[in-house]
Length: 254
Image (cartoon, rainbow, N blue to C red; front, side, top):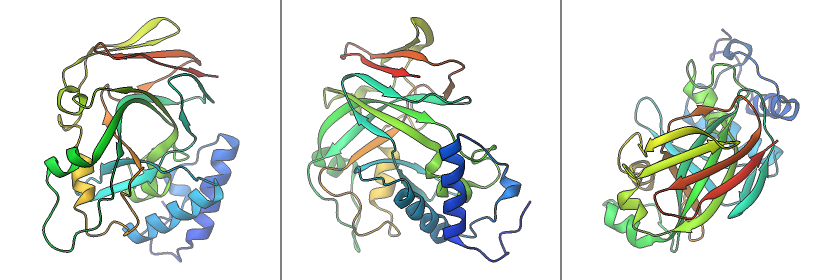
């Protein structure tokens, strides 16, 4: 593996990741000079976002293996209750999620911390969503999470679907969830968020002293994490997501 102690050039790494994405290719972790820390990774992610001309205010949140809250922009980002189209790629994975839209800013706090109730009050609308994942890194984040973070946490598309009741942020975990691909079920079981509470990672990020001052502004859309694990999509086709009795989200991969 290339040593992260080698001279690190964030511009070069961002360009390499961008090139791989443009051609639908992957490279092993060993082919990269690795970010040495969170700042290096975020510098690359920001440069990559500029290369990809990302302008949407839509984000994913999670935590690193050591518990550091992190985020990445969602791209390509489509807001469509049904009929959205995302390019399919070999190795693409799918996650059914719920996303929230902020109705007010959540400024970075220097003293105190946000509570879950603060987040709930700041959320104006909740949507059903679908995230598509393909990393330019063959091993995704299994060897270097910082490299994976630089690569926008593997995001390769997001469809923001119909609005659902705000109560879903309380009840999503355990709600019946059915996902079909070309009419065949690929998930049919209770929704299961990795942290049970869909707001856990967003709350971690809201209280992170390292997040940018400009983050979590009114209007931002934040997706909250998978409800069905990451399902590999072996073929392109039509996907339908039904969470409880909510309006289905339909999209096409092709």
